[in-house]
Amino acid sequence: MKNRVKNFIIIFITLIVFAIILLFVSFQIRQNVAIFRAVVVEVYDKGMLVMGLKDPYGGLISLGFTDEGNIGFKQGQEIAINCDGVLIQTGPAQLGEVRDIKIIKEKSKTEIPENVLRYAFSTYENVDITISNFTNKGMSVTITDKNEHPYPIFENYIIRKKVKNEKYDSTDVGTYIESTENSTSSYIPPEQEYIWKELEKISDITKKDTFEELIYNMPNMTGDEDYKISGRKINWEPLYGALSQGEYNIILNGYNSIIINVDFTIDENGNVTYSEPEIIP
Image 1 (cartoon, one colour):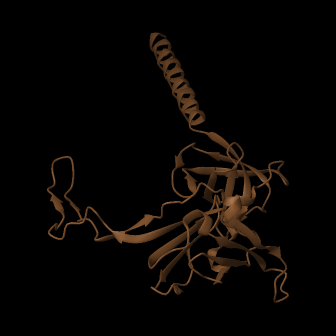
Image 2: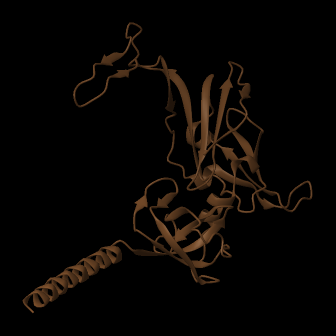
Image 3: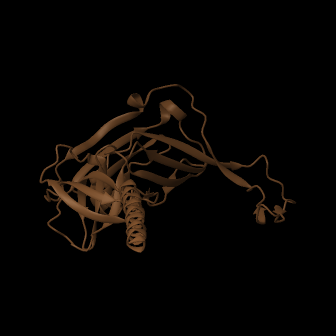
């Protein structure tokens, strides 16, 4: 009888301990579950690009499908992602362990912003830039954009000139820094002989006065409706003055838009030669 009571007590205590362990493990599992709500932006063969509902203008996440595969994902759907809550900061970001993905709404109320669609679907390879009427006082720029979501045209510019670097020392060979317990060895190169320096402005004239609209969202000249043509005629004389002989560089840029770089040279007679426009992502 005593042995039966003893065994019963042992079994009872074991069951209690086991139940406590189960509750603890269950609690830990629940603690490591996060439900992430997002909108589908683009679907790939093995994954998709989504946009977080709480941060639609910057919260882009790339994730692969779960074992269920593609259950009918498409752009604009609102989904719930069951994951461990770990966010890996890459570009775009990635989630740690994704356990399950459910489609909550076929059409989310959250619209995908134009800049996100441009990031996902547009490419600089579909943009062609033509420079014309280039003088020492200005130039015209025409942009032909074949993307469904075209890049905004540039909003401002700066002109730089190649000048002698005052810090240049022909005897300087650079500095070598030995490694330590807390750092690795490194090399600081000497100053360059020539550097690019922005021209001094001769007035505080606004960009509205220096940018004269030339072409904006006009139909394509070849008749292809997929082409979107825009441009600007730039007159920098009121801002920088007529440029003298030398080597120059003009950078056209704007918020979330293409950045165009053009190198050009003006000779002693005021003639201009320039490089092909370079698009900088």
